[in-house]
Length: 236
Image (cartoon, rainbow, N blue to C red; front, side, top):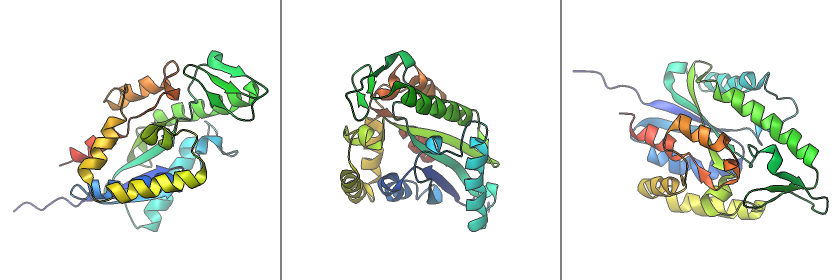
């Protein structure tokens, strides 16, 4: 009699607690038949905005997260299904020409086709850094010998899921808690809501990234997260 394959671990790297709370239990429940467990590592903010990270060392920094995780949990690369990196696009892949300076503003304001900013130079600097880092990470199919995938919420998780891109921290917490309560034991509902926010994104991993990097698509409400759920569902 053939020996049953051991279930593997999925490591999810995300930016903050609201992402963790929103995704963790619902994803773990969804994947329980295919995977051993989901474990989340939080980077405490977008790595693209950290002072000590740029396109020359971003792969090394993500690899360290994976290495440390494997050591802490006594795991080998073969024990992991994949490493999944969840990011908010922040609208950062917008065309430079669509970023317009308006010094009367105190913060960024997105319109249908533009981004208004109190300081265009600072915004360009931040966005160009993010573009370089994630384009570099997109080149990596493996990280520390584990399959490595990147998935996004645009402009952020709250925008994609609830159409509330400017939610303050208390509202983010409340939304995350409610989402977890609703979907932590509802695999079908979780799948359906993630499928509903695909919007115009092609349901193909590489093409989904071609889409979000093109034109001003990163300011649109969308996500390619459903592709991860399909990957898990089809892992027999």
